[in-house]
Length: 265
Image (tube, rainbow, N blue to C red; front, side, top):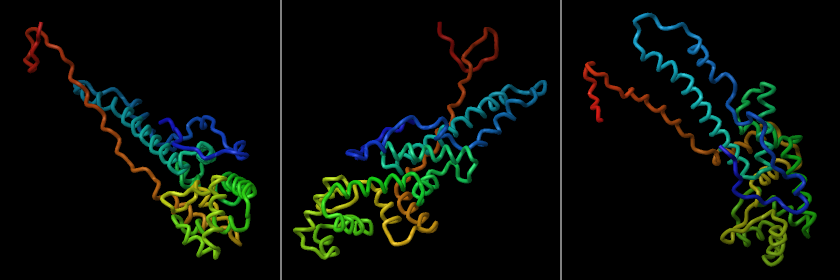
C-alpha cells in the first residue's frame, strides 16, 4: 500500500522540520518469523511412490498463503500508521522510522504502531520535540501568548467548545475571546467547525495534554493518553482473501475415461 497523506497543515517557519522521504526498507513488513513454516514444506522429501498428485498442490499453496498473510499484515500496519499520523507526511515518516528502529533492535512490539507512537511522544522523543518546537513558534507568531496558551489548554481538556463556553472558562469577554481564537486560527493551531473549536493537529493536542503541565508525564500517563488517542482511529481489520482454487487441467484424451468435459472443435 502506498501511503498518500489526505491533508497537510504544515507551513510557515515550521516547514524545515516537516519533510517526506521514502520509509525505510521493510518499515511496514510484519515481524520476522511469520513465514518460517513454508521453508520446511519446500525442503520436505518427495512423496512416496503411488501417492496422488494433490498433496503437491497443497505444498505449493503453503508459501503462497504465507506470503498473502504477510502482505495483508503489512497493508494493515501501513493503514494504521497513516491513521495515527492523521495523514501528515512528517508524522508518517517518524512512525515508520521508529518501527524500523524497533525491529532492528529486536524490541518487543516491533510491529506495533501504537508503541512506536508512545516512544515518539515521550519527553525526549522525536515527535515530542517537533510538536514543542511548532507549538512555541506559532504561539510567538501570534499576539497574546498567555491567553492563547490558556485557550489551547482548555481545548486540550475538552474539544468542540463554543465561543461562549471558552470565554466562560477563560473568564474573559466573548469579544476578546473571539479575537484570541482568530489569532490561533491565523497560525493554524485551532480550527472552527460549525462554531465549535478544536485543534487543527490532533497529535499536537496529545502533546499539550502530556507536556503542558507542571510535571513531566509518567509512563502510565503516556500510555493512557496515546491509547486514548489511537484506539478510535485504528482501521478495521479485514480478513485476507482466500487463495483462488486451482483450476483442473482442461484436456481430453481420445479413448480415455470420460471426465465430463465436452471438447469443441
